[in-house]
Length: 214
Image 1 (tube, rainbow, N blue to C red):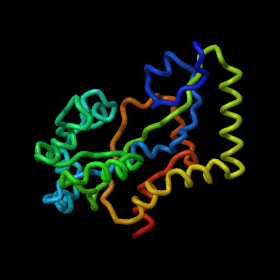
Image 2 (image 1 turned 90 degrees about the vertical axis):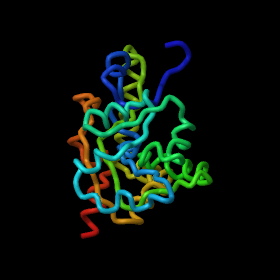
Image 3 (image 1 turned 180 degrees about the horizontal axis):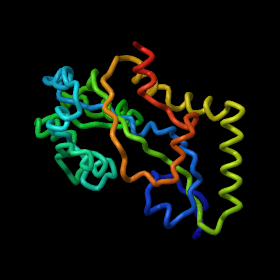
Image 4 (image 1 turned 45 degrees about the vertical axis):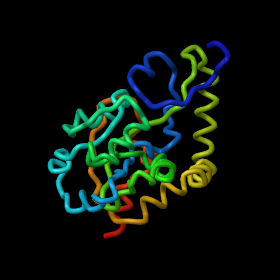
């Protein structure tokens, strides 16, 4: 309440306690759709994995402060932590981890930036867990929250939200459609109870893409 009216951030129990969320996932959950970066010499390291229990044995790299780390650890994954963002790509180059799962919203740009380190986008695997990215306002700003929600729902109804979503996320969507991938679905314990997961029209579900291939 000091000059900023709206903040965009991931859904969490702590943020819902502090702020008033507009529970409309503006990224349709794409930030929870994750594809591994791997070392170029290990391009098929995950190709034959068919069970999540086997996948958990491989070492994955994550930042120790990221919420994704908590999600992955809660599912029993073997997480190698770092406190340095750029350093994680060098860890992958040195094979101090087997893979580095990245959101499909990030992986394209990161690959272009760090491909000189002998890393590439893995072609066979996808890790997926529900995440929500909301707009938040001050808890007392009920009128603004109502206006934003009305705008989102109107845009969803007339198709303009989907048009904007596809326009700005076409790379990520096309990346999903390029290869048939084994989808490993996890539970996100950090997701607040009031997340509208029952509203299928609000989410982009990568599992449906894989099922439609069959």
